[in-house]
Image 1 (cartoon, rainbow, N blue to C red):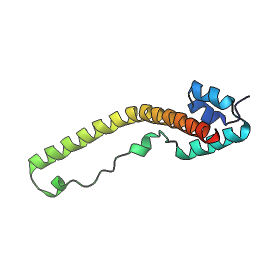
Image 2: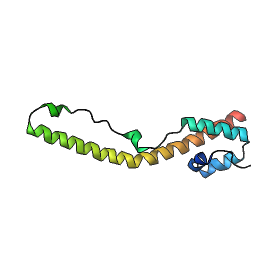
Image 3: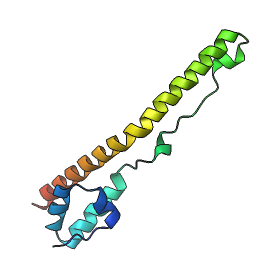
Image 4: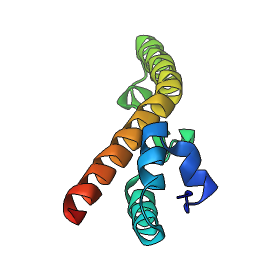
Length: 111
């Protein structure tokens, strides 16, 4: 049988999941797609945006506090940039594991 799921979902799935889905009928594929879309994670960079709260060093009138504040911002920016690059890979792995688990659960429930 052919895949009866949307191309955007099919693009995210592993080849082994696509093969197993191809053996299922259309209603089961539709059920899989609905559940997968509801549980998958999106990998947009703005999901991990950091809120910069006012730093208490701003309220102190010491010059060394400004240095500490700027150090905080730079450190925060570095980790935020690292998060942007690592989030996509973690999200893809999570979604692939989710699809395999969901497919396994569907097979167990149908037997």
